[in-house]
Image (cartoon, rainbow, N blue to C red; front, side):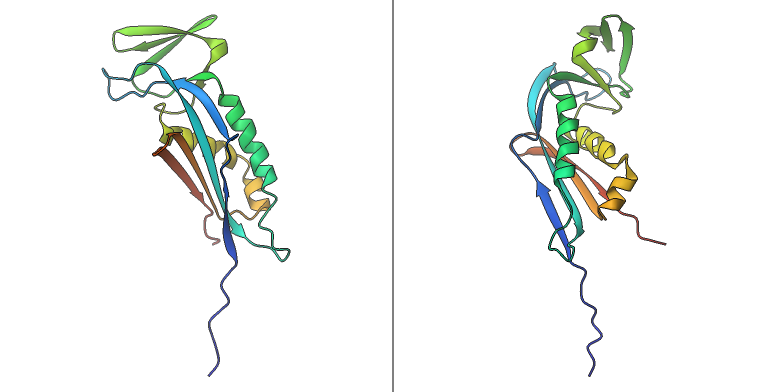
Length: 173
């Protein structure tokens, strides 16, 4: 009797989780049109999981390239106030050298040089995860070059509190 079972593809997942893969930032989460947290900060930790085939040399990919991209991304967020540019509950005015952030019947003035308006709807770990993932996926050729099948980004604001975002390669037609 012939064995018709095909050999499984050698896929593995590499976890990039290191102490230096972090950023410190101020934010506030918006709960509805009249309730939000006060402005406060966290030390966010970022983890990246890369699923790809193992090559003949026993190597998945040169994940130092992924680390370099991740370090640049998190460094770009470090020590800023992060504001959800696409929140339906915020109105943001440019009053050089400040952003005037309106919420409900109040506003706060934030120095533009210390604030990043992110293209997200709320300043949460789940939105930060999708933001970092979207930045990594901007270069589709990069993911294809490394034959990445799945990419997962997790952003944690503390032990036991994190959000994840996942990208999966579409099946070939």
